[in-house]
Image 1 (cartoon, rainbow, N blue to C red):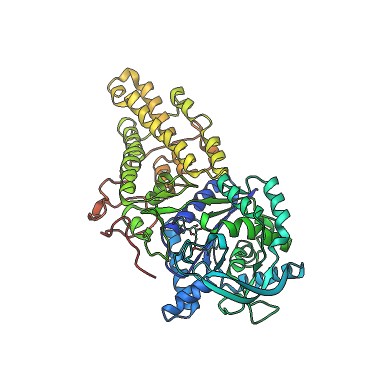
Image 2: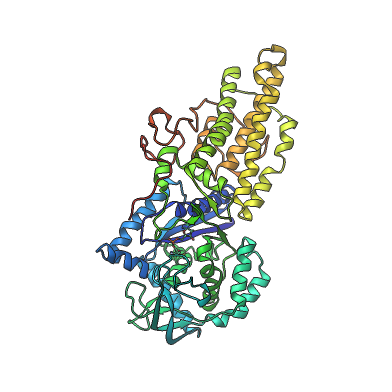
Length: 532
Ligand code: ME8
């Protein structure tokens, strides 16, 4: 059986989760679910990054110990997962003792391999990024380009990681593996950073105590980024008690991240793995930012959106669909309440929801829910030919929005097919009973195939739909018109009720297919988040 290993970044616990975190996790979940549909054994990892200065500072500002803040917010990140229907196989916390032990083991090996030396670091430092800033990336007024706060001049005794030793190996890696980083713009960006000349970087912090202790010098802790990156590797060693999954799943197939942490994943990470003598991941996919008012949402800026409120009103499927449909995956895109409502109404309710309810209703009305097996109508079969393969190829290239568009074209095609064939006319004419069977059978097959293919995006509603069709099998091999056996169909309530406007009472208009219980909230779909 083949294996597939996909990860999200591990999120900082200096504040609560927001829509940006949900976005990456949803995208990785789509990939994980798709690979399970291929029959592969999948490991999908997410979790929290709990050490380092940003977390220590945020905790102290609240009068808490770092561990207390980490516990509190790790809980909120992990609570988000079932709500967005994330099917992760493990939730790693970098304060897990097994993670700490693995970080110490790997970084000791890096030192034994000759890539660590002692020195003093001096540079401009942003405590929110937990990162020294190269001179050419500093905004006027000595400001951090991301957080717009003043940088501090820091000097510190450190152990250094000899990143410069990997200048050539990294250039070679980029020459040999052009899809190591995708999309291409990010590959180019990372490569030009490498070509500009790599300088050694601090591996440890002297003044900090909130971190993984350095085994060979107890006055130091590891710089949080090395601790954090190693989560992708360490998790496999202890996620399943008594079983080490490393052999089975390492190297990772896909790390999904946003462009803010490109350099760490495209430069430091492969260099660190080479230094440790470990295999490199297959691919890093770098998506863009969700924007609100043109600015990246971030915990530090405070202008965050609340995914919990969106889900409460519209269900997790609607949020998942909206984010992957409205924002072209890989690029930046603005999100807003109005564009969410527009997509919900015009596409989920009017296109998929309507296709589902009329198809099921006609099968029940005209055939008591049992339609004889038919050869699918060639008119529709032609439009479905090769679809599943095409979707698979796109997902292999992490083109999640394009793949969704391919499937959605078939949802629209099925609706046009209903109009073209007008089953209600056929039903009036006994002599056309065979034609009606063919139309209804073809439609049910069309609905079944789009449901299987949409499953990674809309897990709850497609399961409802496939159950209603009496064909619950999710395997991709069945995502072909005519491959399935729709047995007896049962009608369902609208999947995406139209009256779920923000501010209105939920009442009986609460969406049916949702990954979470609850409802009746009157909070706006997209609302400012309260602070941690
Ligand atoms: O950087 N749009 O954690 P973090 C899209 N702990 N994605 C967004 C986003 C936005 N507006 N805001 C956040 C860290 N994200 C480190 C990572 S990994 C070894 C360590 C998502 O909490 C996106 O995936 O700041 C981004 O890369 C990540 O959250 C940053 O999360």
